[in-house]
Amino acid sequence: MSALIREGKVRIGVAVNGECRDLLCEPRQSLLEVLRDTLGLTGAKEGCNNGNCGACNVILDGRLVNSCLVLAVEAEGSAVTTIEGIGAPDRLHPLQEKFLEHAALQCGVCTPGFIVAAKALLDAEPEPSEHRIRWWLAGNLCRCTGYQKIVEAVEDAAAAAMRTSKPGPARASAAAAASD
Image 1 (cartoon, helix red, strand yellow):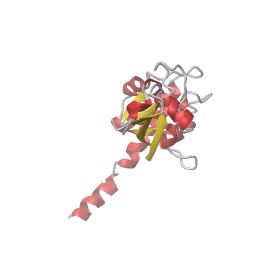
Image 2 (image 1 turned 90 degrees about the vertical axis):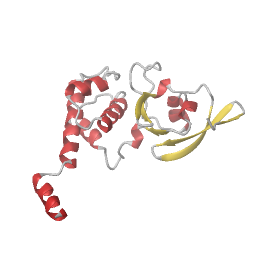
Image 3 (image 1 turned 90 degrees about the horizontal axis):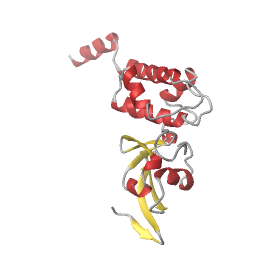
Image 4 (image 1 turned 120 degrees about the vertical axis):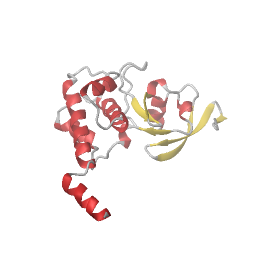
């Protein structure tokens, strides 16, 4: 660890949503606390603070984690993606669009965690079954709505991504002709 201890705080370097950041944090602070309180990234929520609700989900070096259970100092040299790094206010990520289309949210407290978990799933498995979607989202709790609309939104986002990434018959034959 290349972190430097200074006045009881530790200096860490971490890439948050693609931006390299140098931060000072207390050794006891969770990644969630640093994201929210130091960086002002409030999309990840403190729901339970013990890893049971998924409201604080982030992607850490390609893995879905509960940021309330990760010490910020453990993120030294890592890449962190939060809900703020998925889409933009003027250009939503397809998962965000599908959550809206399917009305897969109510109060919104759990929504960022579900979207981050779904993104981690689709990054790992672009064509998940309903069973796999439910398994990946099992660490997320919603107290307002049922989970069916959330699952349908993820299924629809996966199907839409596959439609845009797979060449259709016309594109495939044109690509084959161009390579001849």
